[in-house]
Length: 325
Image 1: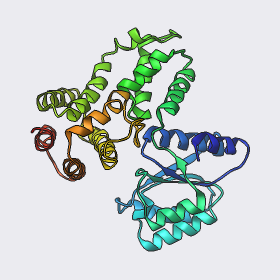
Image 2: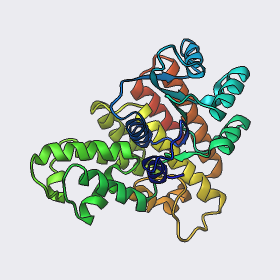
Image 3: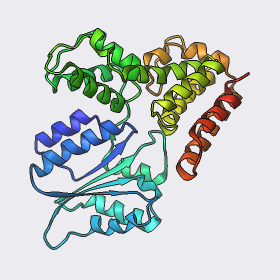
Image 4: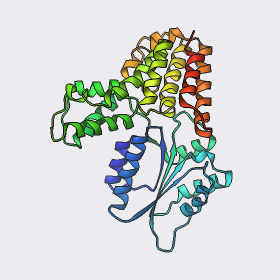
């Protein structure tokens, strides 16, 4: 179910207390959670709990989902990766979803759109899912117009397309750029391309996707140069892992179709500057190299989250092993 439809149901007093969010656009996740919470509890006092199966202390909060307290307090629970719960907790939670507590809101969040487990399938069959995957280009344009509109600003198609080109990997990045633009132009109501390009942070977003271009073209020198700029500007390795993974997944899908897709539309959203050249990029990599790239990105992600590492060394090693010929 799309976000708009779910929110319209709530506005029509078709209330629901449990939601399964599927997709990794964190802006959409937070947007939906905030809207549902506001529509459900109005201005009433609420308590919010974020639970992760990777946090052993957090698992104790599962009991608070299942049991109403003495004062019937309004509570919001955000449970990430429910498939990682132990079997008994999975079963208890599933039974709760069939008969939730009225003053509790529960959001089950699965970042990985392609993740399939028996438990996730059961949840989806029970309650469906809310689509919080980064939207298509067409839907992204509508979101950009909406985000400017709620800030009282008018934009034309050129501004929308520039935003998509430079920061369109996720709505989180789009929203951040819109925040900066609105601050930059102060009280002006009409936004134009010349003004947004004057923002000091604009070049940083563009360089991020120039980096992907250099990877696609297997230009080792440019890739190393851009990595150093990105890191010096405060960009983290983890913030590059997702777009790199999306990029190599796109290469993989096209490669599996023998590069014969004439009207390529893409499976995972990437900026237009990348998307328009995917068919060319796939010629630069063998299927074995693409698979190895995805494996190494998985290792890099895990290494960054579990060990003390040197960012520049990790990225240069990845680039050297995969891009340099």
